[in-house]
Image (tube, rainbow, N blue to C red; front, side, top):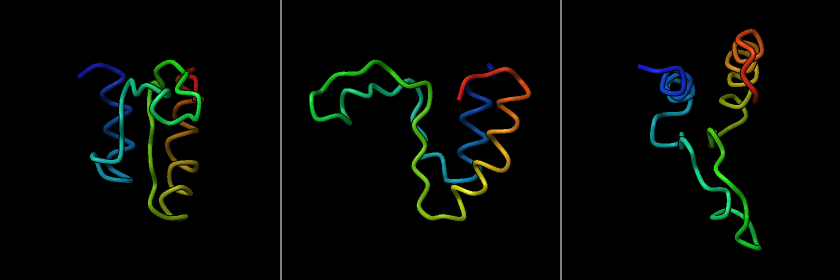
Length: 68
């Protein structure tokens, strides 16, 4: 399992794997249909999931020197 898969799995543990997209083209999500791929698109379903992502995953990404 590479680093990208590990990070996606961490997001998946919080929000469910089906709400984590890896290398997702942002053009699908913009009005003008422009934008390159985002490393991760995570869609939390409630405030608690968002708090957990911010509290647990973001600090880990900072420590590892990964952009977020």
